[in-house]
Length: 419
Image 1: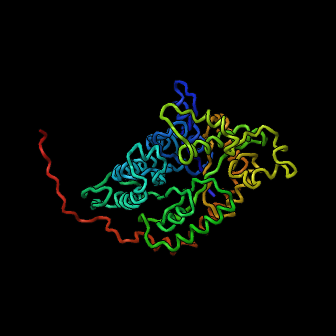
Image 2 (image 1 turned 90 degrees about the vertical axis):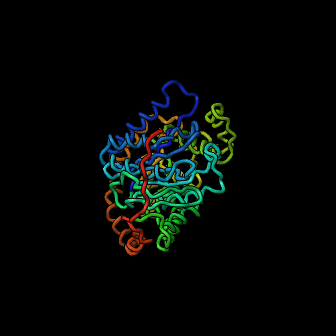
Image 3 (image 1 turned 180 degrees about the vertical axis):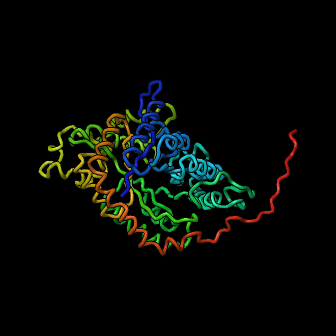
């Protein structure tokens, strides 16, 4: 199993001068530490206008800094909104190609639609069109990164003539491609299109087992891959804070993870927002108990009663609100459950709410020292077994549609003198 880190650049109110600069520079330091510790990937979102929840509107810039200051950690767009109303497909292909060169071939290319009204409305995108936009854009972006020249496209949501979209990525035909998933239907869609599944739902290991089974069944049945190279992988996100003392881990990490979930729901489920005015952190503090995010004021033993502290991590519904927040031994058992479920990658959410930079770094170091090694030792054998199991499907889906990678085009462009 692989372990990765995830960033929204959360910044709860109130804000002081330099707050945004601080969290971004701290995140960059955390990525550099994660690289040294052996974490697999840094995943960075792209969101717009979601103040407090996500100040990550230009991930290609942040990820370029990550790529330039690290050696091994993979550089993940998690995700790029590929709807033409957000990002023209050619610009996405150019960004991914450039970042893959800067990182020496370490890019993971996550795609998605987004679904918040704040973003869709801000770019005047009709909600009813977003899936069709994604369906149109993703295969064309894969072609742009692979063909020289790109033969052009005429579609409902974007059109462009034949052009050679440069630079090309180092990874050929293109970097591994993923899609954001939050429900079972998108997990199935990821498999059906030969894409990696980035699950941004906080699911427990039992639910993950079913999602893994469904995903790989859909992958084996794939007859319409979105890219030229399949990427059979499923990744799951979870909260994360590791400390030798359980109560300290909770004190350092649980509020931040709860705010992460609350602020997500604010924009995607129940919130009413006035740009530049609504204070989500204050609303979280006021409404947390009735929303199911009660602050743990009791000791751990009191919180779990007769079941004992060792069971808190996996005690029924608590795990989705807590995730990998606990001691190394507790987290190890929780991770084993995901490993047994067949999950390929766990993505840790630590930079959330008001979680402190120092605590996040200490947590990563302890996890890498006490927990990661056991799973890293098993990872190559597990990955090889998976590749062997799905070798026939992987081979079958390579350039499934027989795309001509060097098409002859008749387009000519006559330069015109400037007026």
